[in-house]
Image (cartoon, rainbow, N blue to C red; front, side, top):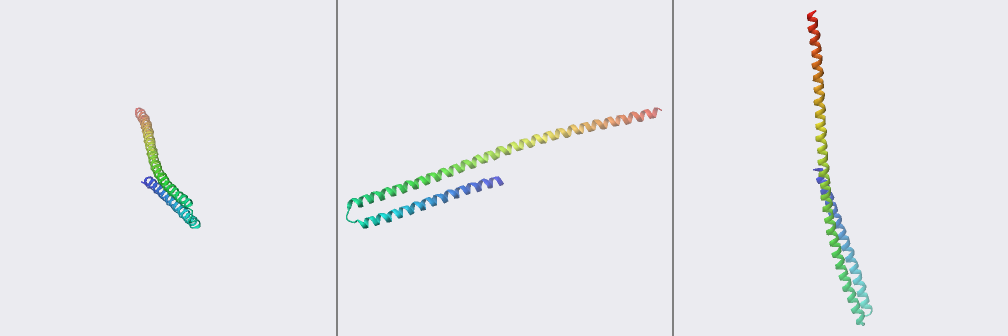
Length: 147
């Protein structure tokens, strides 16, 4: 029960880390876009008459949006991969814990069986020794009766 909660805690921690990382990445991406947009607007205002520069700025803005979009997709894909890896890690840990538990249970059974055998052998020897003492006492008692 404790191990299951531990695994859940690890999984929740990993998920929170992923969400936090995605949030930071998206925030940084938005800040970059705002800065780039601001710079492009300043450039447009500085040279309003040149159509080529405006077109170039628009292309750059478009590329920046596409790059931002691609970065967003990459961050999303990375976060999905992280979540999948976290699940796999959790599953692997669960399997390892289960295997260890089974091994420990088997060792406990073997130890219990060995102890049981040792106790049985000791009690058999004790009973045999008690019988020998009883036989000796009976022999001495019968030989003293004959005298």
